[in-house]
Image (cartoon, rainbow, N blue to C red; front, side):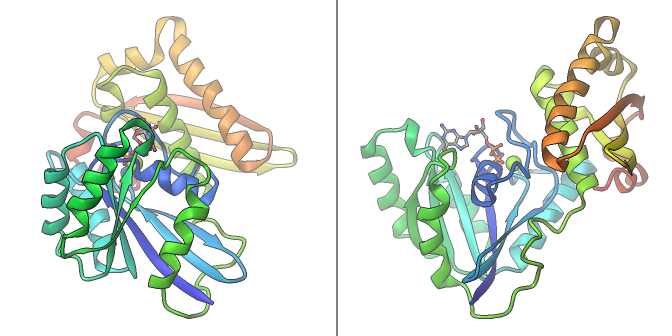
Length: 288
Ligand SMILES: Nc1nc2c(ncn2[C@@H]2O[C@H](COP(=O)(O)OP(=O)(O)O)[C@@H](O)[C@H]2O)c(=O)[nH]1
Ligand SMILES: [Mg+2]
């Protein structure tokens, strides 16, 4: 059987997390119209009788401004250094020249296919022009236009990916869909609801830490902290009479219940930790 590692790379908002979720068929990674949502390297494992592919979603590539960003780019670097194939994601609505500069600068040691994403929102002419542009690039083995939002993306891509992967034995249990713990995904679901419910800036100042995860008969009890930089941000997350945090909590609980297939009791707390994004100890504590 074919077994290999495939890393998804690109600028923020290209659709990397959308693609990972579509390939695995689970909401593993947060998808948001806001940039820099993904902070970790998230592995999604796809196993059949014929292959096992370990896909890695990565944070969008940016110039670091905080220690948090440096750690995010560390996750990107780890994905550059291993793997059998890179999938370089291009948002067809963005500037191709910039994507090309980025991809060249990665100095990839593995073969790469360029995926032209969001073909559903641009003209066929534009797709064709992008195809011509990238097919001449030295790092590019193949150009494929996709729409990561479309469920069928998985079947169409698989045949293109498999020839690049070596023969081997599976690394992971065939039941397993990620290398990360349930606890991690619970934290990410809560963080995703903060992106959904809050204005532009706030999500970038927050982290989520799951403090307690207890499985009892018929119920999972979860306590989690939402970490912010400033007292004013705490007020905004709580909202009038606690309305906002209540909404975040109930939205998150529904998704967590679907994810763990169990009834969930969820309690959220907001904590102020000034400048946590530049504090090594806090970053370690929050899993970055
Ligand atoms: N129209 C369209 N939008 C997409 C497609 N793929 C992703 N998006 C949107 O692009 C935004 C960024 O997606 P996300 O997966 O979070 O990007 P990431 O930052 O690269 O992980 C979200 O609003 C997605 O819904 C696509 O194929 N077509
Ligand atoms: Mg992402």
